[in-house]
Amino acid sequence: MSGRPLLNRRMNGLGTTIFAEMSALATSTGAINLGQGFPDTDGPESVREAAVRALRDGRGNQYPPGPGIPELRQAIADHQRRFYNLSLDPDTEVLVTAGATEAIAATMFALLEPGDEVIAFEPFYDSYAACIAMAGAKRVPLTLRAPSFRPDLDELRDKITPQTRLLLLNTPHNPTGMVLTAEEQSAIAALAIEHDLLVVTDEVYEHLTFGGATHVPIASLPGMRERTVSISSAGKTFSFTGWKVGWVMADGPLVSAVRTAKQYLTYVSAGPFQYAIAEALRLPDAYFDGFRSDLRRKRDLIGDGLRAAGFEVYEPEGTYFITTDITPFGEKDAYAFCRTLPERCGVVAIPNSVFYDDPDAGRTQVRFTFCKKDDVLHEAINRLRRLVA
Ligand code: PMP
Ligand code: GLN
Image (cartoon, rainbow, N blue to C red; front, side, top):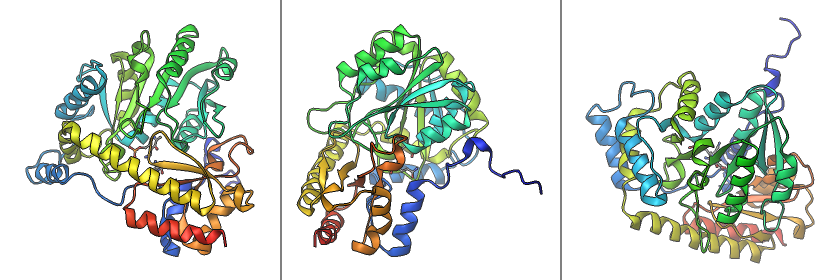
């Protein structure tokens, strides 16, 4: 064998995802896993039953249609009308993917050329960095800074160059829980229009907003429809992160471009789950409201507990993550802190520092998820109280 590295150089440094690393640490130590974001309670029984029915009735056991089954594409279009008054043609403007993860990959591979620049918030969801790199493009970070994590829109304007191809948004934002306001979205839209940029918006936490924060899809703003690719997923909204059903919504030509890439990634995603998610999207408002208010209560529970345990806490407006700062413990390195947290007190968390290029911006930030049963959250907080001692 030649001395040439096996791994393509575009993937240099991408290593193992922090989620896999920290979940493995939770498994090997038996610690409470408040790292990777997955609920410890599955989604609605009726939706699980719908998947079983589809499987038993032989619906979706063989390759479903490439763009997704018509029932799900129609349900996605109806969901967009119901919640945001957006109209989509389910045949040409909706594409079902293997989770939002594949939607992000297919979108980046379809829309980027080597050398293009993509402006994305940091801390960033890790697959953005990987997919932009695999497309040969360059990620330009727009740093969200504690305590508010609001984007600096003047800084955004300054980062736009002739090479900028697209703005990659994520709202509600993982890991900070920041939710873009209507005014921020309007200002971002104005910049996109002025500079003729595409916008890709990852809205997987669209239904997980608290208090006054509400999710506004940027695609609903004037002039944005033709330049926006919106991405969402069933994983978070319905607590089925293992089903990997996601989708892309955009004007026909954009969906067609993304579909071209998607065909050669997975071709299709799992059939029976698509039938079940088509039903889930039609659940009554009570489901969405109940899920949101339950999570809000859990946010407050963990927020109070973390504060009492000595963390500085940045209250999230959305998602099921809460970001903290570990400086009050005299700690200076979130990654080192998270590596030793299981042995120190039996809890796993995620160091936000790995989601920043700027080594100083997130060095002392640690993220906990709160999509867990109340007794698990209480026990985790009791354990974290040991840190003070
Ligand atoms: N985007 C963000 C911001 C996420 O947090 C996640 C995590 N699950 C994904 C995309 C991926 O979603 P999926 O599981 O549907 O692939
Ligand atoms: N989105 C989840 C999180 O942020 C993890 C998904 C993954 O493991 N890739 O925790």
